[in-house]
Length: 87
Image (cartoon, rainbow, N blue to C red):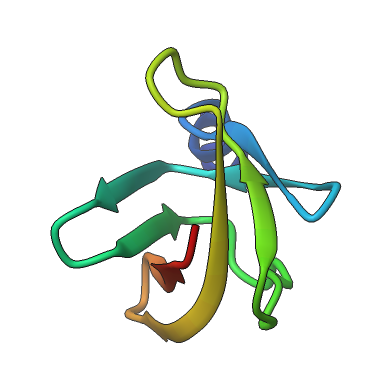
C-alpha cells in the first residue's frame, strides 16, 4: 500500500517567504495584474499575512519578489494563497 502523504509531498518544492521555508505545489506570477499565486496540498502551513514580504523562488527567471497578502481560499484538496506584487 502506498503512503499517499509521501507521494503528495514529493510533488511539492520549496520557496522561501520572509526567511521561512514552505512547500508548494505550484506558483504563478501574473505581472499584468500584479498577482502572485501559490498552491499547496499540504494544509495548515502558516504563510505570511503581512505586507512587504520577500519571496525567493528557486526558478531561473524570477529570483525575488516583494509581495503583500491579498487572500486565501481552499477546497478539500488545495489551498490557494494570493498576494499582490508591490515591487
